[in-house]
Length: 351
Ligand code: GDP
Ligand code: MN
Image (cartoon, rainbow, N blue to C red):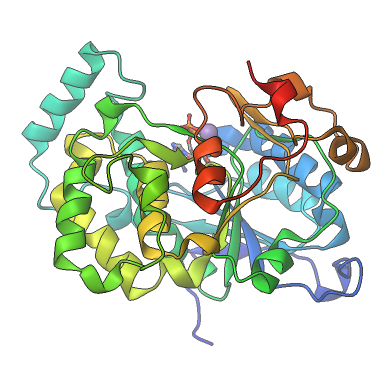
């Protein structure tokens, strides 16, 4: 294994014997949690970690990778390492991956930000938010600390888990040949991605070999690909395959989008970028909706449909808060595309 520069990351002082053995008979998968965070996110990420550990990871001891554009401070490392049952590591993002590429015209990008600020687009005037979206779209899976893993679960500061997990979701992904898992889907603000779909269409023309035959176009478009219906998986939660993101097809896709400049001239989010990739580059049966993983990220909740489920998993979410079947969710469309029956009890949750 190649030597890693000492300045780039730190490892926790645990020894391998400290980690819990996985519950049940299944082996631990080659997987890690990953969180992009600032030092100021400490207490929000601490609360998220505590819930992930209590609801699941304390029985498994999966690792946790933390990434930051600045060095993590000692308090951040000390507190998070104390909470995670697995090995923790702390990585610095290379500056070239947290900045606009040289082909971006700074004046044009600035004008776009000013215009979006005027139009009250959320994060419309933020440069760092754009760096973040580009980093999550194209780079986190290639960070040195991520290279040895095959699977990740993305966790953001402030999220909540409302139910126990009775199954290792990584093992589920492996055994069922899934590549991308989500819990919440919704419509994107069109002001942030006005030219994204045209760019995707150009990509499809240039790289037809990368488009999966049995893809999820039906989830993304209501007119066979002419226009985008803005449906996307909410990427602040993701359980997915890193080798897929590191594949030539995903990298060609990301580079094509990056060249087009929309991360800076508009405000393309990593959620529609990942979702469109999953929808077009993967087979539709490789995408999985985790009904059993209850999840909250401001302002939406996924609370499992079906009372039996919620009692079995000791859920503390209010089923009325479940976003899945509400008007602004795309999850019904996902079920229709997959030819799946909606879970028992969904009718009671329509608003
Ligand atoms: P939102 O969920 O779209 O409202 O955006 P967040 O503020 O939650 O940011 C998304 C993710 O990127 C979270 O994990 C943040 O901690 C992280 N993040 C956002 N901005 C920065 C930044 O400037 N530096 C670092 N290191 N992380 C950031
Ligand atoms: Mn967030």
